[in-house]
Length: 97
Image (cartoon, rainbow, N blue to C red; front, side):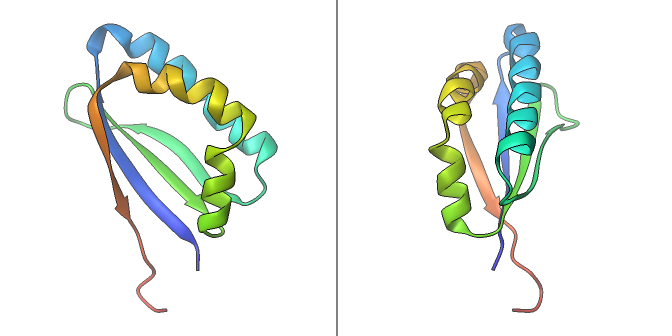
């Protein structure tokens, strides 16, 4: 079964440019290097300074591989330092199993 979720988070307003640049780098790196990523995209939410990431992988192992990839280890710290607080993952499961 696919491993799909949305992660929501708030960023520090003064770090928005840094955050957006890191988002673009991560999206490109995932697309170029992770064939088991079914979808990986950042979105701006309508609340001020709020963003979300949609992530879908073939399975949980593919998500783990993503988190252990060289590009993740390089780019994720930049993303994390822009986040004001933590983040919450909301898992999306198919209607029919």
